Length: 112
Image (cartoon, rainbow, N blue to C red; front, side, top):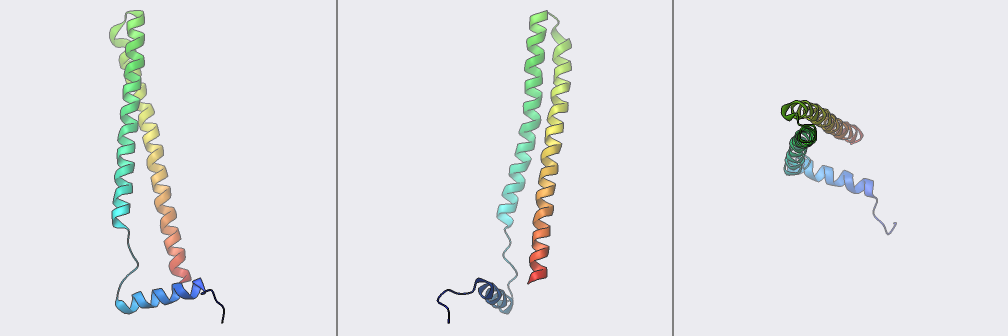
């Protein structure tokens, strides 16, 4: 008999014990909710930063050239567009991460 336990057999044993107790696999609802809230705040901040930077550049150019609303409006729109682009990239990243997690769970269930 070997001194070290077989990790594969231990996982099988744990799965059988949980099945006998009527428990499903542990869900990380708290962690998932935290990650979703974190991504949501990240997306809000990305959009806000785009708007603020656009406002700053536009206001600075308007002050420099003496044309108050023109550059400010233009760069606010550009900042909004840039913020939306970055925000959509973050959303795509979050979607990919969720799909990868689902694929990993599906492959784990197929093996077990």
